[in-house]
Length: 300
Image (cartoon, rainbow, N blue to C red; front, side, top):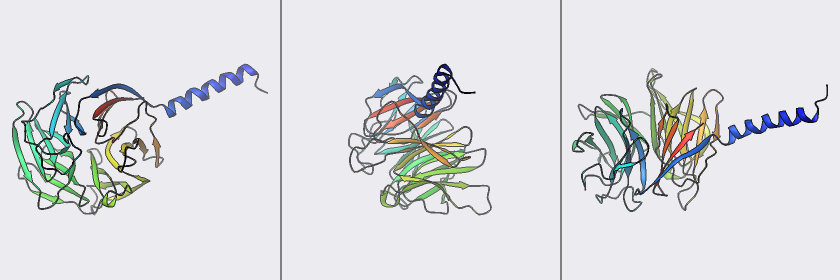
């Protein structure tokens, strides 16, 4: 039977609506201004949002004391622009919350602040190993992971003892980390060797007898943040370029199909860094380092 005109219009409408779902999977919920090169975002169990700010100048390794943490409410309102005491941070990046303490990766050390009063309660010096700590991730209430971009190393850190070990394997330009507690797997993205934009995604399964990072096949990039989505998917950010202002990108990788798809965004993003994904609300809190803004995107 040949389809008539009305049937063709009906089927065309279905195809168009499906294509919109594919190419427009994110919408802008909010855009917050007033940051100083925001780099990382995390939250505590009560919904308080924390944003690390490298400082007035984009100098990620400068020990100038002008870095700070900003606290946001669940709707994105700035509650406290300066959460930590003045002068206690230089160029803060990755964040993690464990046992009511906000841990911060700050160049060559990890600093912890009490969430109730903002006072510094923890410090771990890693200057003998690295000068570019980047991201943090939580394994459990006693253990953190930390990436060192300059050496391509991931460290496993015991918080009670302050002892740390380097995990085997080299991750060129090691950057964002995410830990899957269900599979006991670590996912990490990189910027590439010497930050050359040929970074990849790597996976390490802690439960395997031989612990070694395995590379996931995706197109290379200047990768920064990574997170876990449902249905065996990963979401990660790409600066695309760092030599001049270049619109960045967000990708979703499906481990079942082994394909990565570009997320269509409602706004231009410059310097999409270490984001926080809020699964229940479906919100992506994305620091735009080069725009001095934080975007809250709704993933459809």
